[in-house]
Structure formats: C-alpha cells, structure tokens
Image 1 (cartoon, one colour):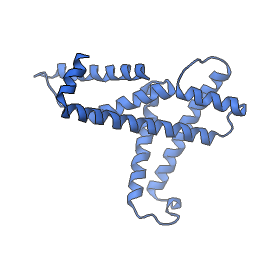
Image 2 (cartoon, rainbow, N blue to C red):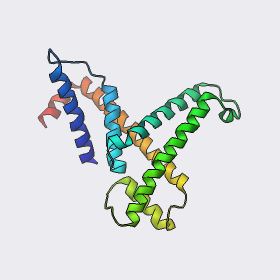
Image 3 (cartoon, one colour):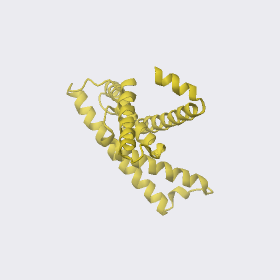
Image 4 (cartoon, rainbow, N blue to C red):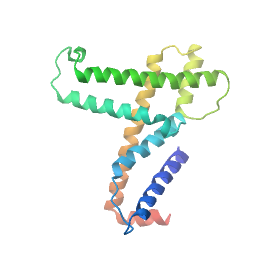
Length: 185
C-alpha cells in the first residue's frame, strides 16, 4: 500500500508545485479538499483494484452522487414505502445504482476471465476477493454480494483515507514543529 500512497502523493505534490511555479508571485490558493478527494480516489483505485484513477473516475463520481442523494434523503422525514415512490431522487438513485452495478460487473467479469486464464498475478484486495469467490463456488455464485462487497470497500476505503489525510493536515497545521521534523526525515 505504501507505494500506492507514494506515487499518488508525488503526483499531487508535483501538481501543487506546478501551480505555485506558474503563478506570478510564487504563491497561490489551492482548494486542498478537491485535491485530497482525487488523491484518495487514486490511492483506493491502486490499492484495491490495481487500476488507474482515469479508469475509476466515473465510479468515484457515481458514488459521490449516490452519497449526496443518501444524505439528502436522510434529512427528509421517512414515510413507509417512500423509497418506492417514483420521485426524481428515487429514479436518479436507481439509475446510479444500475450504472454502478454495470461498471463493477464489467470489472469483475474482466478480472475473472484473466484469473481463469492465468493471465494475472496481481496482489491487491480485489484480486484476493475474486480468487476466493472463484475457488469457493467454482465460478461467481452471487454477483450482487460480490458487487456489494466491492462497493463497500471502495467507499469505506475512500472515506477513511480522506478523513485520515484531512486530520493529518489539521494536526500538521497546529503543530508546526512536526512539519519541520517531517521535512527533515
């Protein structure tokens, strides 16, 4: 996992250096949160799936929209059966879930074919999960469960990594002597 963090962090730091060097006075304001979200998506993509951010960008955007819809619906009083009403939010949520399922199904099927053909030797979470599913059931027994697990780990990995990075930045801004020690290391 450390190499995935290293590569992703180097990319973001280089991007920030380019922003600063391209400014007139050698300084600029950076919306760090948007960069951290991209950074965590890159890290999660590399560690969980051994894929690139460009491949998983759409999955990230879909999950982000689905999260926003979920937050919105939790603020509203929940009426029994409300999730079955054909509201604009419910329809969009269903579209997103279908698109997400399709994206993960394609990813799962491609990797399953590669594993069966012996064309992959990847060492990542998704590969281990898929190999165990294939060995256990002599094929993918329950695609919905597998997709649910992949979604859960993708989302949980993204959220926890984002929270960890934000908290690290807060602590470094509070304790500036830690910044100096980190730079020396």
